[in-house]
Each structure stands twice: as C-alpha cells, then as structure tokens.
Length: 228
Image (cartoon, one colour):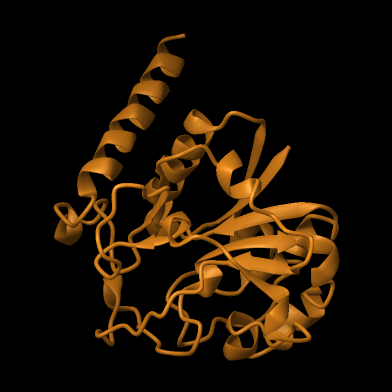
C-alpha cells in the first residue's frame, strides 16, 4: 500500500480532488490518500496560524510520519499539483540510506506575494518540502510537540534531522515547478506553485491543459458515480 498525504486548504479544494484523482487513475498499486485537514487535526496540531504561512498545510505536512505510526514510507505533497505518471514510480525511488527524499530545488521566487495575496517567503531549501518521501522510522523527531513548537524555518529546512546527508535527492521531474523550471517532456508531477489553472487569473498558465484535462476526467468520474 502506497500512503499519500495531501495538504488541504478550503480555498483549493478543487485542486486537492483533481490531484487525488490523477494519482488514483494512474496508479498501478493500491494507494491510500489522506487529506491533512486542520478541522480533523485540532487535537494534534494546536499551534496558532503563522502570519508568514501561505496555506493551511504549511505545518501539518510534518505530521506525516506521526500519522503513519513512524512505520514504512509515506509521501507528502502539496495540493496544487497534478500527477502525470504512476505514483509507484516515485514510491520505488525510496532509499533506506535516507530519512527523507526530496527534489532539491534551487528556487528563489521573484515575487513577494503569492495567490490570494498570501506572502511569498524566500528561504534556503525553498519548495523542498512540497513533495517529501518520508522514511518514517527515521523521522521520529517530528512529534506533535515538536511540530507545534518549532519555527517554520526549522521545519522547512529540516533542522530536525541530524544533518543534510540524511536528505536524498529525487529527480526534478517528480516536482516540476511550473513557470520556474524549463519545460521538459518527461514531467511526472506538475507543481503550480505560483497559482494553478483553477484560478481565473492562471487558467492559461504553462501546463494548464494538463490540469484542465484531468479536471474533466474527475468530473466525468463523479457524473458516472451519481448516475449509478
């Protein structure tokens, strides 16, 4: 069973459902998808909202190992994405030498404001935490107590690990930053980090056709289910 945790923000519910559908539609193995909704984590994630966080799942993502019982491997990903390949391909990249595996972007945003007027923070290892392959047993430092008290930078820069040598590198095609990374034909996972096609302002952004096509398939699936 491949365990996937996806960040949830009420403002981007449609993005979550399209991503989830794309994962399940293309998967060759059983996949369990869990949404990290703050309304379902009230007893676990008690920290107040940070003025610098741009989404509801800025910190809840780091509860993935805890919610997995610190066993096996789990994948976290932001909701503003769409899968283009079988997620088993990502899951099969896990390497026991590492506690965590990410795409090691060199990402320095030019903007200071993101979608919906949210702040665009600049920091080292920017967007590394948007797709994470957790080796859960090696991430026991991520207790609810730590996630509730650690600074945003300590969490997103992986200061909870003994060293950066415990962070393995994933191929860039498993977290392609739309609008930043050069276009390529072998993209496996698109990340609309600046704003996705579900927003009117970005409906024609790069790779928008991929998202719109998956959205149509998601709606078609729902219509078929309602007729049944």
